[in-house]
Length: 281
Ligand SMILES: [Zn+2]
Image (tube, rainbow, N blue to C red; front, side, top):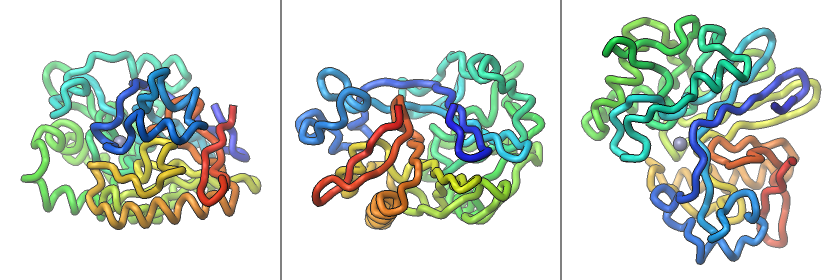
C-alpha cells in the first residue's frame, strides 16, 4: 500500500510473468541489456521483460475506486494464456480488505481486454457485474471509438465485459478530465487508444500518477520511442510518452506503473541525455 497525502493506493495482482515482446517488440533481451538499471526488478535472469496485470484500489474521501479490472475469469479472449482463466483475483481482493460489494467506483483507463475483465463475472452461465454497488466510469471518447469499430474486435470482449454493465445501467460515460474526488481525477494521455486516460492523485501537497498503458514497462522511460503493437495511433502514443517522461522528471511526481512489476512505483529522473526509473522500495 502506498500513501499519497490522504489517499491510499493498494495493488492487487492477477498475473506477473516474463515475456512482453508480443506487446512491445523492442523489449527483447539483446536490447534490454543496454538498460542496466532494469535489473533486478523489471527483467528476469535471462533479461526477458517482466510485466504485471494488476488492479489498483484508490481510497479517497470515503470512496473506493478500482482502477482497471484486469483479465477476469472464464473470458473468451484471443490470447490463449489470458483466456478462460480460473484465478483467485476476487479472493485476493477480499483478503486485502476490499470485498467486491464494497467497491463504489470502477474506472477503466481504456477498454482493452486486460483492463475490463473483472467488470463482470460468470454466474450460472450469465455475465453479471462483479461490483454490483459501483458506478462504472467509461471514457465517452473511448467507448464511442469501440462502438464505432466493433467489427475490428473480438465480439466476445464487448459482449462479456461491457454489455452487461450497459444493460444493468451501472455505467457513466465521462470526459477525459473527469474528477472522481477533489484528490483524484483523469488526465487525457491519448495514443494507446483514442480516449486513453491516466489517473492523477494530488493530496496534501503530494502528487502521483497512475500511467495506464501510455507505457507498458519501465524500459520505455529510457526508450520512449518504443511503441506497443496495441497502440492505436503510434505517432500520438510516442508524443504522449515523450511528454509524460519529461514532465514527470521535471516535476518529481510519483509514478505508478499499470503494467510495472513489483515494486511498481518510483520516480522518473534524468540519466545523461535520457531518463531512468528510480524505484521506491
Ligand atoms: Zn494493458
